[in-house]
Length: 173
Image 1 (cartoon, one colour):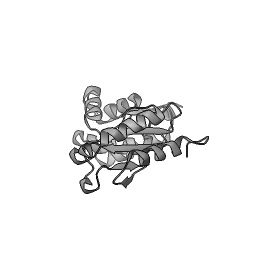
Image 2 (cartoon, helix red, strand yellow; image 1 turned 90 degrees about the vertical axis):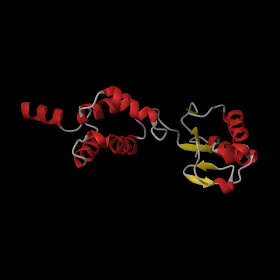
Image 3 (tube, helix red, strand yellow; image 1 turned 45 degrees about the vertical axis):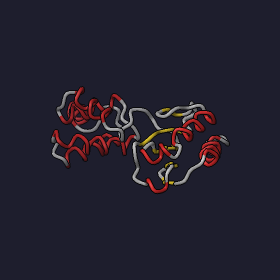
Image 4 (tube, one colour; image 1 turned 120 degrees about the vertical axis):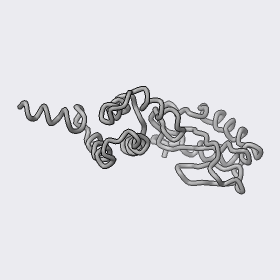
């Protein structure tokens, strides 16, 4: 009995969630090095979808880093998210070329259509609206990434139609 409790405390997470064991394997692969924090956070986000406080604390303990440092890295980099994402994502590029070609108007259309601002997710978890500083497709500005598909030359009608289509139906799909 004691051995079972000890092994649970040293491997994985008390919740028994197998994703923690997979994360532990990733940390072990990096030999629990402090400089592997970003790679470990990428793996954690890949496994869990987002970085909640409990997960950040787990990483902090395993890598023997102060929680403030782990939280600081997770909040500094735009790629990491601390909130669950919606089933669909709409990322509007706000780089210089996209801004000049109307990225702000596209964001306003989404706000008008489904009532969320950048960084928010609809109440039903259907759609997340995000912005990116530049995705490197400036020749096709303005650019929007719909569920990881980059689409250029977007108009207000294009983006309105896409997000409206996601919100119609019971599951938003």
